[in-house]
Image (cartoon, rainbow, N blue to C red; front, side, top):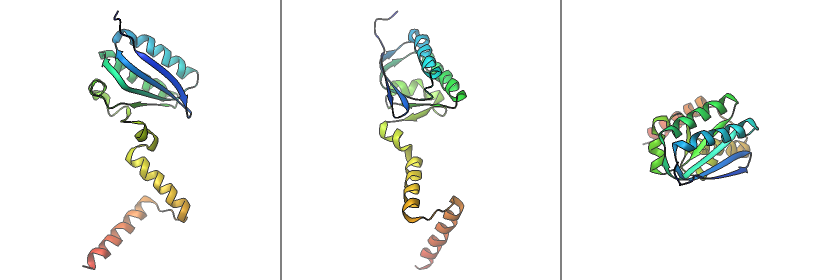
Length: 153
């Protein structure tokens, strides 16, 4: 067993359980970590955010463990979101990048990315003006106005 330890802090924030990891994440730590997370999921925590920005090393079986955790929590109508930008974690989870919900930082997580910002702006404008357009109608209106604007020149 290696002497380095994985630093884990767990905070319940805003209805989601936030788990911050730091240090090396070796293969020997996978079973214990998975048991703890499964226990938290069984206790009713169905929205989990895992911050792995400070992870310095990841074993080969860590990605497979996270994949099985995603399957477990999705079966209970929950979700796991990951926050990281570092290269070690990116390389380790590269094969499963389209399966995991990955965000670069807290701000992107809160806004939900680019499409989340658009949805938020749409809701705010709909509340202020009272006008709600469906996507097809908005596109037709956009092309009509763009064609009219181009025909002016």
